[in-house]
Image 1: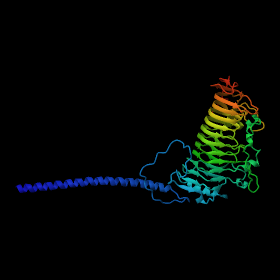
Image 2 (image 1 turned 30 degrees about the horizontal axis):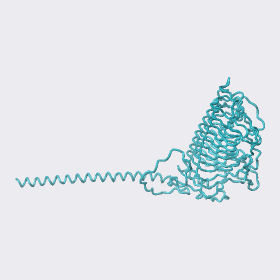
Image 3 (image 1 turned 120 degrees about the vertical axis):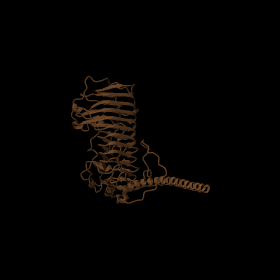
Image 4 (image 1 turned 60 degrees about the vertical axis):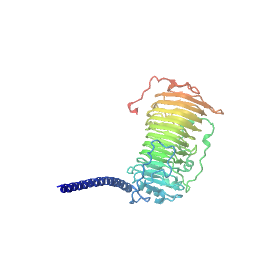
Length: 516
């Protein structure tokens, strides 16, 4: 009986041991299975991402290629900064895995003589199909490119035009036909960026010398007398039109963006444009920073940056030298913020002209601050034609440093770029215009405020204005005001006693359709 009990006890212990061993192996197996499953899931997820990336990654000649996914990084990279960088991105800072399309791989020669237009078109056609792709215009090459449109609306988003080389315009009159409105155009795109350290050279002197007197003259010249001859300090470099022909009278803008969202231009230089250098038309969400404009001070109608029918615009940290307005803000613009600008030579920073040929103009919420102007025709200016309608309201000009500027502060509601314009009672209504911390030297007149007889300017505020004449043999004028109402928040130098305090006896928008 005892033997039986001993055998039974032994047997029971053996069974218990086997059960315990089985339990331990099951736990270990589960641990192992769980660990292996985690790795498998991660690998599968990464494989899926890699496959998706590979399907959108194209070779430089535009053809698709199957690639093995790269090894996953051991740690995530730093989070992107939300603020605008002070300098443009350098080569190598972008995502190396993004699809790149080098114009040289599409047949561009970059020798400054061969027409590379078709190569640029082919590179764009390939990049257009790939989201977040990059067109590369490499440094140390000079590309001759004719009129070209990089257009949507069926292109993918967030395309980068990486300009590190130089693009030059043709001087052969036959290339331009009867004339075009723009040379390089980006249209109907979302998230388009033009960046780099390259140059867009319009070689505009061939246009300027062909018809230097066929362009309208800035009306403010009627106020000037010979002063410091700044207009003659920058003669255009003579260039002859190829084959001896005459360039068309319609002059192109060098770089234009039309109907696009989230546009960025940074780092590049635009020089010697036949007409306006950089234009935004019907765009929403525009950022321009750390770029340069360079043209002679007497090059006709060569605005630096031109805005029209565009909103939510940030322009900052730019050097602008041209023959017309450094920045021109036209009808349909709102929520525009301009700061940290070096302007000169040029005609200053202007809103308008507005209301030409009886048109309606609407401009609102404009801020221009922290600007340095040297040897410009005007400082900060609002100009409108008689006979227009609409309104300009909510404008701030702040911290403007002027040096040898002919007229630092201007409102001109009698603007006319012809020899004579018809007097009309209708006008664009101006209200809520503030000038503060505008200081420096002038050569002709410190303040010129000429408002409409039928629709006077209201809410014009002057604060911390200190403008001194240059101590030279200039014919200097006192401040001038006409139908201008507002307030002085501090004493001005010189005293602007012509500003009428308060509001006009009767001032209202003429008709309901004039309201913006």
